[in-house]
Length: 77
Image 1 (cartoon, rainbow, N blue to C red):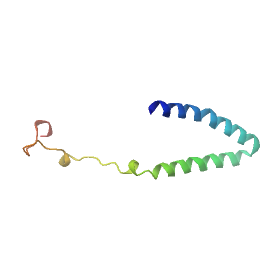
Image 2: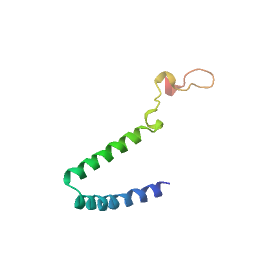
Image 3: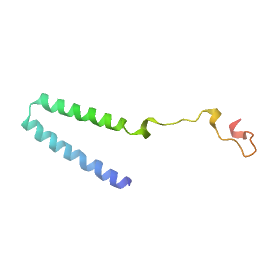
Image 4: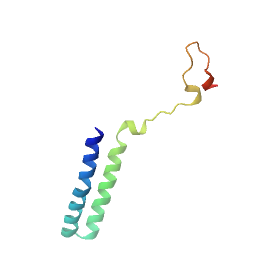
């Protein structure tokens, strides 16, 4: 899966350069910059919609697992 992700990332960069160059040739500089800013904002909002990103539960020292007999182990003391 990591290899597919790497290939996709490496293909997206030249494709983005090509699309940006075509847009810069056709549109004004302000329109290109506003479009890019909107796409970055949209990507950020879409990433924040993934629940696993903001539901990270960190263990506190009280939440650490105890030994089978209910006593803390040497590493937890």
